[in-house]
Length: 115
Image 1 (tube, one colour):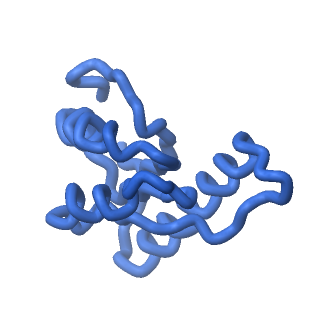
Image 2 (cartoon, rainbow, N blue to C red; image 1 turned 90 degrees about the vertical axis):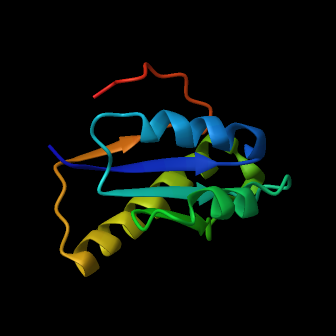
């Protein structure tokens, strides 16, 4: 089983270390993990870059498209879609295959070994 993981992030700077620990503690890691920053104001993007820089399978991108009116759920959906499109391209470029797509929030509370 192989999968890609998408995480929308907005103002989650304080949660990113726990997120990293949670994901890295899983038995089965994603082939690509994309964190999509939705215009955070608290430095989440820079914090994520610092935390994940040593992992070539983790990518941090900035969300490019936002819905008019600022509806949070629509913008989160847009972030997930952008992350998935980015992950698909990364997998194609690197000749990686996956069977599943997962999404996790930036504030997960998961069992130590979920997979």
